[in-house]
Structure formats: structure tokens, C-alpha cells
Amino acid sequence: MDTQKLLGELAGQLLSGGIEVVDLTAVLGPETPLIKLPPDLAVDTPKIEIHKISEYDKNGPWWAWNWLKLGEHSGTHFDAPVHWISGKDYADGATDTIPAQKFVGPVNVIDCSKEAAADPDFLLTVDHIKAWEQKHGAINPGEWVVMRTDWDRRGGSEAEFLNANETGPHTPGPTAEAIMYLIEKDVRGWGSQTIGTDAGKAGGMEPPFPAHTLMHKANKYGLASLCNLDKLPPRGAVLIVAPLKIEHGTGSPIRALALVAKG
Ligand code: 23J
Ligand code: MN
Image (tube, rainbow, N blue to C red; front, side):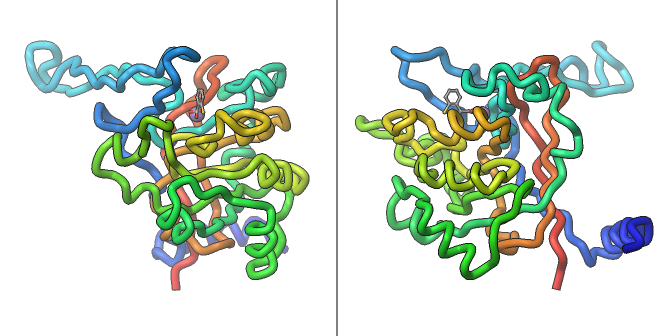
């Protein structure tokens, strides 16, 4: 294969629109939903703030710029292995040490939108993944796996997105067994369209928060609050998800993009 020629063709298809760049990112601002943890367990990530420095005015006559107050795990974001205690010792597990090659790769999209619409507590099982593989082909080492739930359509309010009541948050996610199955397949990471990579009720699972505990223990990555997964094919798209190179960062907001063949 002539790799140089292939890259040239890719660039040409990007120019012509034969390959489309699909934006998988939510708007980052004061209204962006943020995770709410049980107050007895944890301190929450702060509200996002965008502060004006100048806007072509006395504070900067010819320019506009802002400064931000922003948690690493805000909006559409990347979870690095050091985010979780099980992955804390990986030298290449922080936003400034993960090899850049890991930020671009193939993605498998498992459509759970009907199941999640019928049951907000829907859990993706090993059987469901195996049925997907029967239909679309085996999931391979180094590939991303993301769970489509169309949760980004719940864009009206944070309350609708978090879907919590007196019994806690009710959002779909994976079973611990499903995560273990994907780790055995040596996937690159796991992504969701909800506030975090785990289900709303994942705190009560064994282990608690299996997508975090097990994926990061295996030096694998997470993606949360992905949008527009309904615009991707089940397989064949290329995901671009690069966190900011925050020093010792545990995660970062990302501009998540997918390259998709049109037509
Ligand atoms: C901190 C504590 C628990 C969770 C999370 C963060 C996330 O989901 C996250 O954004 O990584 S579950
Ligand atoms: Mn996170």
C-alpha cells in the first residue's frame, strides 16, 4: 500500500467533502450539564464560567478575549487513566503523557437508542455486544467503542440530562461484564453520550463505577457527553479526540470529531 498516496487521497476527500467531519461536541458554557456526586462522598466540579477580559474596549481596544473557569471533566470530555485510583500509576496515563497516536482511531458505535428511550436505566450487556459483532463484525484491538443512546437530544436542561430523582440519577451505561469483555478485546476506550462513562446507578455496581475502575486500571480511556452519534455508521468512522495537554491532567474538554465517508 502506498501510504503517502493514501494520505493525499484523504486530504483530497476532506477538501471535496467526500469525507465529512462530524462534530460530536456539546457547547461548553455556563449551561453545560455537570455531574452531581453524592454530597457525603465528594466535592462537585465547579460551574463553568466565561469571563470577559476585553471586547474591543478600554481593556483591549482592538481585541476580544476571555478567561475560563472550567473543571477538567466538563461537557464533552476525555477521561485519562490517572482520573481513577486504579489507573493512577501509569506514567503514560495523564493528558500530557498519553501518546498523541492514541487520539485518532477507528470507532465502533453500538446503537442502544431504542433501549435507552424505553428504559433510562438500560445497561449494555455482553450478549448485546456479541449480537452487534455478529451483525457488524468483531471489535478489534485499538478501536474505540461508544454507546449511542441519543442522550444529547435531552439538551433542554441539566435536570433532563442528569435525569435524577430521590433514588439517584437514571442514565444508561455498561454492565461491569460488558466493560470486562471490551478490555479482553483490548479496545482503546469506551465512550458515552451521558454525563459520565458509567451508568447513573453505577455507584452501586461491583466494582463501583466499572467503566472508570476497570477501563482506567487497564490504561484505557473514556469519553463522556458525546453528541451526534446518530450521524455515524456502526463501524468505519475515524474518531479524533485530543484532550488539552494539561500538566498531570486527569481529563479535559475535547472537540470530538469523526471522519465519515459520505454516500
Ligand atoms: C468524578 C467522580 C465520579 C465520576 C466522575 C467524576 C465522572 O463521571 C467523570 O467525569 O469522569 S462517575
Ligand atoms: Mn470524566
